[in-house]
Length: 423
Image (cartoon, rainbow, N blue to C red; front, side):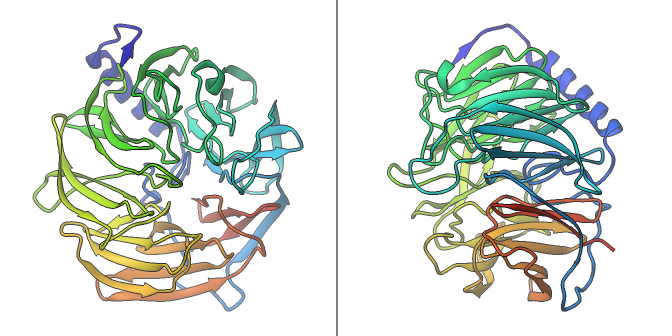
């Protein structure tokens, strides 16, 4: 690990807490400002509501508009959606009115990216909105910070070139995390530049850590005690680090060499005894690890492939239970599983469910499946109840959805649709 300044943890914690309060006071309730929502858990704000049932025709469509290529889902903050897509040889970051889809501003950058194996040649990462800034991470590792109101570029880094990083199978796909004055990026650079912490204000690289290649899993902020830390899943391991300095507190192996990916975002939660736990999951025979942790170590409680092994669906945690799609999108079968988070016991499963992404709000779940089907359901210890089905788009839905102010935003390879799903 290479540290490039002496910014102390205490000063960083104060700055982080100040920024968290400032952002909360400036952002309307119901924002979806980054991958998987307010806390990167797939769970919406507490005041977000969902309809109890859908008519046979599905939820009402509010608007639709064409989009370019890519699998980057929308971020939504302060009434604006931030769309990241590709048109021709340009990656486009576009602010749209969240209520109408009307373009407010556009910015772009050149790209020559081509995926090694299948998939899209567009960007993969959901934009990250932090206060008055938008961070994008393009398929070729171009990290850009823009003014959210105007689209003016504040700084940019060519991370793959600067840190000698491989593009990977599908290009850069780990959404950056903004935590206080730092932008944490899973760059996958050679040497000690697997992870890089950038200064949010200037774009300067402040620290570098790990020799690991990048994964497709987004890093996750977590408070350990009263201090901010970051859970990261790289290509081959899970680790906890200090966002101020890049100091790695602990790590354990997670992942496998060969044609595999780590793509689900790690979870952090409290168990029934108040102990802090994490959960990481992957397919390809890797499975899951659920461990208690602090700043000294992570100790597995249960692990393996029997409970859960999900390719990229991040589990939804509620009431001590996990709901997730087990298996792989490209190699069926799959199952919707309900798992006791404390023990890893499978409480029930819905076989041949198909693959996709789960979001949670108002005691219900939305399943956005890659085959184009959209489901409203309720999952409990007793089983699953299906409350509505729809197919608003004909294409494949791999971009992560966004849920904000009663509106669900989904996209396929050509079209972005906004649906009224609140009540």
